[in-house]
Each structure stands twice: as C-alpha cells, then as structure tokens.
Image (cartoon, rainbow, N blue to C red; front, side, top):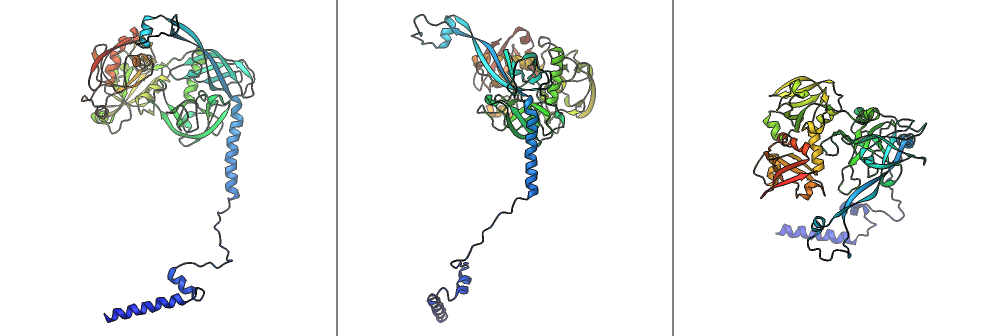
Length: 503
C-alpha cells in the first residue's frame, strides 16, 4: 500500500512538471511522447510528385494511336451506308360506318372474326452497312438488311449514291451480296478469320442509328460462339467493340486493315449496345458469297443425322469425361451418315481434323462442306474412339427430310423454339418427369403465341406421337414439314391441352 502511494505521488509530480514546461523548451520530449512531427511556421512541406511519362512510353502510345487511325483511313472509304425500302402488307378491319365501334365488349378478336379485314400496304424504311470487295462494285452485307427490299440505295463515304442490285441472299447464314454500277471503287481486303486470336484488337466501322461511318474499337472476346438461335449456321466471333442497330453488315477489321468478320447481331436487353456483339467469320462469308455470285444460291453439304448437345447427365450415361461433342439421336436411311457407318448413340467429336464442341458447330462444318467431299469423322462409340470416312451429300429440300435446319425453319414460322429437358431443368420448372422436350422461347405475335404457348411448357406429343427426346420430336414433325400444320399436346405444372399450329 505504501509503495502504491509513492508511485502515484511520483507520477503526479512528473505530470505537473511537464505542464509547467513551455512547448518550445522541450520539443524532443513532446515529440518522443506523442510521436507528432512538429512543423514550425514558414517551413516548406515537400509534396510527392508522380514520375514523368517517359518519352519512349509516349512514343509507343502515339504509334498505336496512329496505327488505328491509319487502318480507319484506308478502310473507311470502302464501307457503305445501305438504305432500303420495303412494302409491307397488313390486314386491318374495315372502319365502322358511324365511327369507332361504340360497344366493343368483346375485344379485337370479336371484331376480327365478324368484320372483314382489308389488306393495306405500308412503306417501311431500314438501314444497315456493307463493304466493297471489288473495284467494279461487289458489296457484302447481311441478308436481314436487304431481305424483302423493293429499293436499295448505297451511299459511299464521299457522298456518291448508287442504286443497288441484290445478286443473292442466304437467310441461313445471314449473308447477302449486292452489286452497284461503279468503276475504280475503293475496296477493303479480306483476311483469314481462322487466324485471329482471342484478345486481338479489332475495329468496327458502320452506320449505327444512321450515323454514317462510325468507328468503334475493342477486342475479340471469344471465338466459335454457336447455339444462339441467330442463324441456322453459327460460328460467331464475339467482340466488345461497340455495335448497334445500323452496324449490321459492316466490317470487323484487324490491325492489318483486313476484314475478319461481318458484324451481324448484338446481345442486349435494352435494344442498344451492352458490351457483347457478334460477327460472322469472313471465311464463312467468302464461302457463301462465292456461291451466291456464281449460282445465286447456296448448295450445302448434308450428313443425314439428327444430333443434340450433350448434357452432364448424358455424358455420364455414355461414359464420357466431358460434354463436348454432338450426340447422334437419329441416322436417316440412305443418308451419307448411314452409308459411312454412323450409328445412333455415336458421339461425333471431330470433323475433318477440327474438334466438334456441340451440335450447332457440327451443323456449320457440314453445311459449309461442298457436296461430294470425302471427310473423316471422329466418333466415340461405346467408350472407344474410331474414325469413319464419309462422303458428304447435297442438302435435300425441306419436305424430303426432317433434318434439324428444316425443323428449325418450320419452328421459326410457328414462332417457338425447343430444347431437351434435363433433370436440373425439370426440377427448376417443377416437373416430375426427367425426359421430354421443353419450349424455350416464343416469339411475340407468332402462331405459337396466339395459341397460348409459353416458355417452360412441356411438349408430350407431336402429331399424336409421344416424344421424350429431340430426335423423336424431329421425327414426329416430318409430316408437318409438308402439310404446314402440327398438333401438339402440351402441359404445364397442372394441365394438359391440345394445340394446333399452322402456317
């Protein structure tokens, strides 16, 4: 107790002693006790400064900037602004003799059913982009830019305008070829899209929203994008270079000034650019355009199989380590596939030396193969890798075979898309069954939408035939490709009902 009191007295004396000292008398003591750096009046504070930009770094940045500008200066004159005019026919009810119908208790359906409708013609205008590939006026663009056009006007960067003629269109790849009557026109060289790498700089030039010759820059974000439902044959280059409505048909250019792709679509929820755009590889464009120029149409290769993507559950069932490949659900009688030895249950993993990742990629490879070409197809059958030699045939007419592209064209006309029902998807949607075909999308205003079909509904029967796989679904649709009508039995989590769709 005595020691504690002495310690308290000593500390108190020290405290009062320090209070009595002037601040200037013991700066070292204060600084050591409170660790504060004192700054006397008039003392200059040294500011931190960033290191100067080196001349070498600045030269590199300016060189890159000049490279972009040089590419654009060479390429822009060959990029064209395409304006189209279309005639659209719509049916509208006759006007009520005494003005608007005063007692419309039943809605538009009642009026359409009991009052005559008159077809009316409307003029629609659209715009897009394209690029000149020959000095005499051959232009590449998208099919959807010029489809159904009554008049095509092509405007060059220098303001000259020409009347354009459509030499050929291919809706399945969304490629079209135009011709204008000109001489010594500016052109742009075509590159090799197989050589581009993810991460490379690319430049997009086009006319978004009618803003002529707009330039945007980005990189190749991905290659080989497929299964998007944009076209029948998909192998898109994905880019983050800004692409908007009006860019369609314009070139995607590398730093050598060569066209490596044709801008064609965007992934968006707002209708505008959201960071993801897609371009058709120029190698596909060249292959299609060559046939359009020579023949006015495209003759595609045909294998004669119905294929589907592999899910994790299917891969496990077939003893595969990955989901890459195309599972053969059906081999058509007398087809090149049947003659070459392909069987149902085979998994196609390579085509003429190129790896096959999914069914859409296989469809593109086959479609771009000239009929009569002999190709090697790598197959996994019962756990063993084998190679088959198949001679590709010519793609038959839609009414002759229920092939995947023909079915998808029919489904587009009906306005809906389907996919295989997986166990995870069945659990998410509340279905107890684990196999079937599910409606994945319905186009607004289509026959499917008018009949009340909705995404998430399960198709149990097609033309009175039960379907549990995409292969069975395609086979059951065979009569509908000729008749233009299909009878579906669909269900949701509670009810079943029959639906008839027709062209």
